[in-house]
Amino acid sequence: MAEEDMIMARQGELRRLHVIEKVLEGMVKQVEAAEILSLSGRQIRRIVKRIRSEGSRGIIHRSRGRPSNRRISDKMKERVINLYRRQYKDFGPTLASEKLLERNGIRVNDETLRMWLIGTGDWRKSRRRRRHRQWRERKQHEGEMVQMDGSHHDWFEGRGPWCVLMGIIDDATGRVFGGFYDYEGTIPAMDSFKRYIQKYGLPLSVYLDRYKTYKSTAKPTIEEELNDVEPLSDFERALRELGVEVVHANSPQAKGRIERLFGTFQDRLVKEMRLRGIRTIEEANAFLEEYLPIYNRRFSVSPIEGGDLHRLLGRGLALDAILCIKTERTLRNDFTVAHNRKLYQVEDKVNTSRVMVQDRIDGSIHITHKNRALRFREITERPPREKKPLTLTKRSKPYTPPPSHPWRRFKFGKHRYERGRPIESQP
View (cartoon, rainbow, N blue to C red):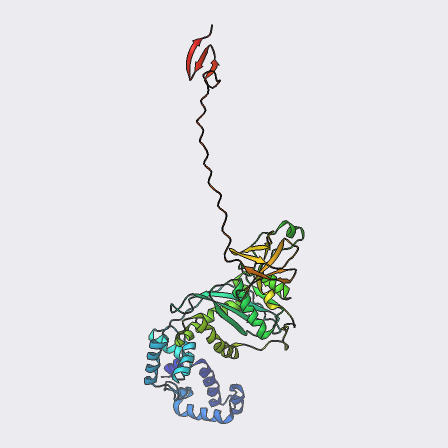
């Protein structure tokens, strides 16, 4: 029996039993045992009394093997598992426990739910072997750096079109801002950044990847090579005009905060929109206005240093004239400009051969010269071309050379040939 008790006891209980046995043998006083075991004298006296009456088994806690008083009933456990299978089949245990409390009024700890689902086979443990990378500390101030990127995903799970979530996350606090768009391009990136700075202000720097929207792929011109200047994308040019530093990452792992955010949203946000039955980009953007403040209150952190480094937009700043696609075009002699397969008539007189065409976020077109807006109109109907009258030309007969023509008569060795046949022999 003593050996069985020793096997069932834990290591901490075996240590406690060893000290109590020394007390029973008179080698250690109860006061000393209390100091060694960090217990009160009253507790030591209880343990000594129990071991004297029950033997070594008395060191084991009386609650060992008994069901907890806080144990959830089997009926509730079965109900939770059935709800999970019906409504939250592919939800993780953490998100499922949140939704059970929010939508069904059932409070279940996420680890408890995880153990239940593993036991029933509805959830499996997964371990990922990750490549070791150097950890980068967060920026110390809010607005010191934001990370920006787009995530292509089936956000509506087939209920609507594929789209892109343009996300912006503050590096110091983890505060998230974003919106859904049809594609990841210059105009969506500019629109997303414009809405961000109108709400929070201009950050000091933006951390981007090397996608063609954010990093120009054009070869430098001879002038740029001589001036040691790299070609800029429209988005880079706009940020430079706004005084925002652009930092390009060499790998997706370098901007891990925004990448992990997209991984979280592709799990949580997709399921939230599934529960709401969201099908369109308009509905999704309206839902984000409600969802992101709740998400930020829960998951954002306080910066290491106080103070917000976002800069307010200056008065009179023509933001729409900066956050746009600028293309230089030729002004023809008739004061027309061709752009995107359309023809525009410039109505202002200007002494130049080149003008700047702006494609703005709202879809409008503006033509400028040296930051001066020019009046213009689109030419929708071009004048018909004059048709030249057809002139009939008399077809001449083919020229036939005479028999004395060199083409017909020529010398070849001792014979003269006419059309390849000898006509007489040479002496």
